Each structure stands twice: as structure tokens, then as C-alpha cells.
Image (cartoon, rainbow, N blue to C red; front, side, top):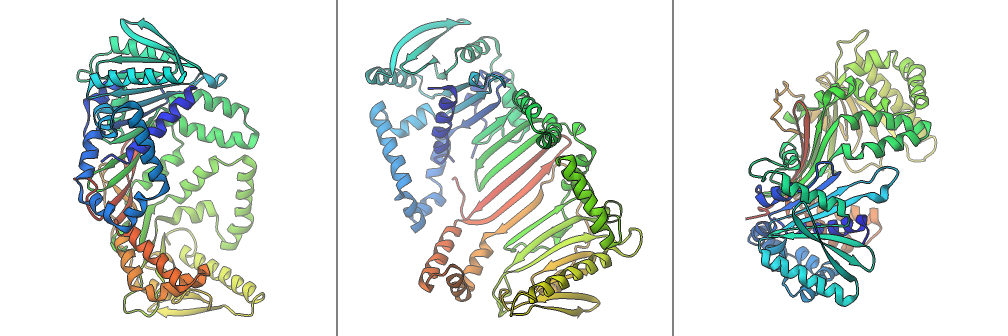
Length: 578
């Protein structure tokens, strides 16, 4: 089996093993395996403590209830799960060992997959290695012998050649197609399709101090990047891919080269990336990046610095919003950063258009008199309509902070005038082509003028509206949504240790909305999807059943001087593990 295929096959096996896992702890067996992995690998996939996780998972009320639910039963009876079950039975039958014992005594401590890309001009020289730390060394040896017997009987394995290096014995396994190299010592198994990579692991086994005396480099990187105790983690070493990236950039067309040159600056500043999964009270999926900020362009540093602060809009977006998202954006830095990735011709066209059209239309220099005075606060919030409200469609408001302390007339007035002109043109164009007419209306809420687009084809209660209120340019689903908005009173200070919310979805509120408004949702779905009302009702019930297992979804960001971590959390209705 070729190196890439071996690595991908092992990755696939480990991927479905993940579903059987469950809170993590730093496992010494994992560190001992990472001690054998060369520091210059490009990818390292780590799974630890499957035995403990699977036990905690089996004992958790969440999974017991889920398996008894209609959705759980449907999943268990699905063709994919049945096929997986038959595959496990076949593995158990051929190996003479139950899946439970294979999981607990062989795979239960730690599994590591390492991959090193080949040189750009010789990609076929890529290398892959699988490492396993087994709880039962005797069973591990028996399993290896059993596999040899099965492969000999099938004709796949032709010969075993004993070899040694660095005081360690290993085996060259000559097969009908290709070869691989196997090292087994005590609880440790190392398998590779390349002898050089295996010998490097054996050299490290002889020369590297034990993991409890010196933390291996990759284990230290996982710890720094917030994944030191995660159930599963993938570490990416950017330096292993530098040569391939440079080769691709050199061979690119002029337009592609502009993008790759800009991307290369960011890639060079990237010191490490880790993606991880950690189930506990909830499921947390994280992405951590370690960056040398000084190597980034000044505009990118401003952009990330601003984004690392929490948006004051979180003070006014309700906890039970169906969806809420709020970030801090330095708009001038964002435009400058995006511009770096565009070909010179495209960048010039955009700049020319801004100077010839957008600038004169607003009567301002976009780069000097508009972008610096937008934000940084911006966000969007979608809420269920009040229970007493006759209108049933969710209400939305988006907000962008606009400062009026710039040169000339207030920027808010200029932007409102521009939006009004666009709305008038849109209404005129639409009405000239359709018999059903759209109307642009204006109303007052105290001193706030609200302009609304009204059309019978819009959902019930929707009148697309815009206004400037309390320092924010608002685009909303109705005048009522604008009236309900109140600006935050002050900014919330934060430190590098704080997590900054980016997005939040209240699945609890969404379930309540589906239940309370099904009388309106059923005919709406039936009309939109051109199905019967009974089918629409059944579809709504399936959605509700699927949503009952999750209460909230959130995405956060946490930044420090040289690192940023994004986290996706699924807060389940009960603990995922005991």
C-alpha cells in the first residue's frame, strides 16, 4: 500500500473510532508516542484515552436517552451504521478478538498518525507513520502475529525480514504490492511504509529522554495551542509545507501570484496550527493558531487587534435570540488587508470605481472620510416575534456604528441619503416591471426617521427598514424592530485571557418558536416547498426532534500576544459524558 493510501486509510479508521469516544486528561502514553515522532513532520493526528472516554460515554444519560429516541433508533437502523457493525464483526472474527477488547486494550491508551510531505519535485517521497500504545503488550504481540498469519494465508504477505537499527529490532514486511516496516516493543507499535522514517523513530527512542523528563516538541505545541488534553487533535507544522508553497507560487500566473505572494506573508508568520475536539459537559471544537504578529502587515495587525475586543452590542442582543453575531471590525484595515490579496489590475479597478462613483455619490473620500468612521461595532440579531404578536416571521436587526466626528457634514446623514436614493431606484425599477407595486414609506419614532420598503410578497410583518439611531446605522425587518433597538451604554473592557463571543444560536428558543408558530409555519412550508400540509407537519416534527438534543451553539475567540483560538461549542441538553 502506498504511503498516502496507508496514511489516509488509517485516518479513516481513526475517524470513525472518534464517535465512540467521550472528558479528556493528559495521557503519558500519548507523550511517549509523540517522543518518537520527528519534529519536522507536517501533520500529526493524536487520539488519547479512548478506553476512558468510551466508558464515560456509555454511562452518560445523554446517550442513553438519545439511543431510545426516534432519531437515535433511526440512526442505529441506518444502512451506514449497519454496514459499520458488520465490518466490526468481520474484524473481530478474523482477528479473534472482540471490538471492545481491541478498543480498550490495544487502541485505548493512545494513537498517533504522523505525515511528512515529500520534496516539491518528488511528492511520491512523502512519508507516513502510525503509532499505537497498547495497555496489554502480550495481546498486542498476539494481534501482530495473527495479522501476519492472515496476510500470509491470503498471499498478501510474502516474507518477513528481521532488521535492526540503533539497538532496536524491527521487521521488514515484504508484500505482494510494496512493503512496510514494523517495530513492536512492549506496549509500543510503530508501522511505516518508509524505512527511513521508522529508523528515525528508533533513533529518537534511543536518544530522546523519557517524556516525563522532557516534554516532546509536538506535545509542547499541543499544550501551547490549547489542545494538550483534548480527546483528538491535529497539529499542522507550516514549515514542512514551505517548499511546496514556494514552488507553487513561482509557477503561478501573474494574477494567482499576487494572491499567493500576499498569502505567503501570512503563511510565513504562522508558527503552528491545531484543530481539536473535546467532549465533556458539552462538545468543544477548537482551532488555535500561533502567529508571529510582527511578520504580519500593519493593516492585518490592526484588524486582528480590533477583532480581539468584545463588541458592546452583546449588551443589548438578548440571550434568547434565535441567532446573534457581533464583532469589532476596523473597516479601513479590513479593506487594506483584503486589497493585498487582489491582483494589481483588480485592485486598481476597485479603487478607480470608488473614486469615480462611490466617492462623488457620497461627496467624500472613501478611504479618508468614510471607512475610518465606520464601526468598529457591527452585528446582527434575529429574534422570534413576541407571542402576542400576530406576525409570525422572525424579526431581524443589523447594526453598524457610525461616528459623526469626521470632516464635513455628519456621515450618518450622508449614508442615510445614499440608502434612500438606492431604495428609490430599486422601487422605481421593480414597479416598472411588475404589476404588484412596492412602496417606500417614511415614519417618525420620536426624532428618528424610519424609511420602510413595503411589498405584499414579503413575509408577514416584514417591512425592510433603515434608520440612524443612537449612533448606529440600522437595517431591520420592520419599524418595530428598529423601535425595540437600544444602543449599548458603554464598552466592556477585556484582557487577553477573556473569550470574546462572535456568534450565538439559542436552539432552545428555536424549538419554542417552532412549537408556538407551527400553525403559520406549516402552510408556509407547504407553499414554499410545494408539498402537502401533512408532509410539512412531518418535516417540522423531524426538525423539532433533531433540535431537542442541543440547547445552544456558540463561537468564541480568544487572543493573546502571539496566539488566537476559535472555539465552537455545542451545549447539549444533557452532559455528553458522565
